[in-house]
Image (cartoon, rainbow, N blue to C red):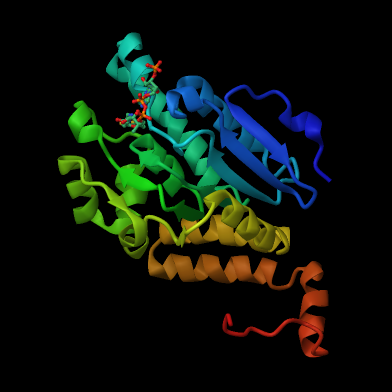
Length: 268
Ligand code: 1HE
């Protein structure tokens, strides 16, 4: 059971707890199209730094209003008239938040809608699963704004869709949406109805896995992808040594052996 007192001190994030340990985290600045200001990034760092420790089993990351996230708070950035050093530290803080998401060991499912642009796409690409709906569109408008990506797009977006497509998106402002966006890898699911409902259903499934297994899925795969194949195979063996012998897995293995465990079947 999650302790609600761990989650009551947030202003820019709305945090809703479910009985199964799934937490719905909603960017809560709809009037600013959920643009990422310093305060919101701080709250994301805080939430994702403590999610595992606080017993969160899976996260649904959503946006309030019609848009998931409009990226960097351009007004805050413009008014602050930052020095290079100051903005470098802003970006480092973004990386802290997004790395905690990607490597933190707790599944994060992003429920996308409307604009998923600039830093909003950087945020979404740090989630483990992305669900788009009919309104969702992806873009990197940095080129048009006279700036550059700073929240990990050069790593995560190019990882998802390839370097050439990312360069095209930033250079020309190209927008992807619908099935094409899914085919390219910007999202794994496209739904006719609500991306939030689908994301919750996926988070519920993930939360039914053993936490140590999810830790490996939502941390080791990303770490191992940063390694050479040789070192990755070694690290995978070490992780599997720990995860695949966890006592909590024995009941599931036994259920398979005595034929009470679910079989893998194609969807009907
Ligand atoms: C904002 C922001 C923002 C909206 N920063 N305030 N991102 C962009 O280049 C995308 C900029 N935003 C847009 O293109 C549009 O706002 C949207 C397509 C997302 C939504 O359009 P719309 O017509 O629904 O809203 P709007 O009228 O443009 O904006 C409504 C309010 O949200 C308005 O504030 P208001 O006080 O005048 O009511 C806007 O100023 C505010 N708003 N987007 C600040 N981004 C680490 S580097 C990352 C680099 C980047 O992320 S670059 C990409 C930036």
